[in-house]
Image 1 (cartoon, one colour):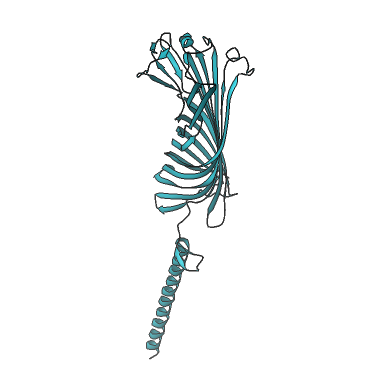
Image 2: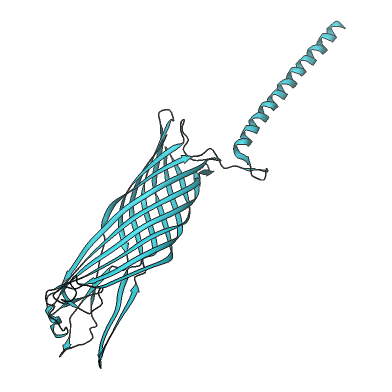
Length: 386
């Protein structure tokens, strides 16, 4: 009897231990599951539970600031820089006959170096980032064309039809831009991350074109004064300042060993303020009653909506330093920035001069270039989180 009781007691104790172990194992698994759920779920402003995307931004042991430095090597393309065309004038007495064939001359920009600098802060609020970036770029080009008589050039920037032996054009572009971004980086899958951002964008673009026209002797039969060898000049400029929203998305495609492919795309529409000015000068000997030679000064102030788009894609590398107290990132890729209708330089379209009975009638017609501006080329970036 006593032996039977001992067996029952032993069995009960063993069962209790097994049950306790089982419940303890369930509790551990529930705790682990709860932690996992907290990592992949979040409560939204409506206080309901939903899926949470894990942040993909670089996290370091220290402050939440980061710096970026970009060096750009870009080529500029802009419409509206045509300054002259070549032809073979044909005269019948003092009458200029129509000329059909011609060769257009325009400025063609080269490759230039620019810079971007940025400062960002990784906020604790849902892993949002605040990032400000400034871009500076300058490009200029000088182009000229010469023709020996009886060939000639005709300037496209002044009003009066003037045959020239030589025409020289200088165009300069100053570009300044500031983007203020609010963004969040997150993993979409194990090897793919996105960074949508909503921004405020402001841009300054200054465009100047100076043209010098050296008159040809073949103007003698068509001008009341001798202009042979005299230099005529035009100075045109366009000042743009824009402000507007910008939206975009950056992507990272992780390859392993710290390397990734990136592709960034953003677009903006800015409300822009334009200020243009067109001036024309003649040599004092041609018009002695105008001492400074300025025969035209036309200003115009107006507003336009200017859309723009930016694309940046290439290869990147990330690594951590000093026991993950700093993060260092590198990017090298191809970048394009495109602005629609931002070149609004004033062009002389038509000049008519009629002498009637006891009266002189003149008429000037103007038009805007309304041409696009594009920067494209190589951009390299270094980022430091600390």
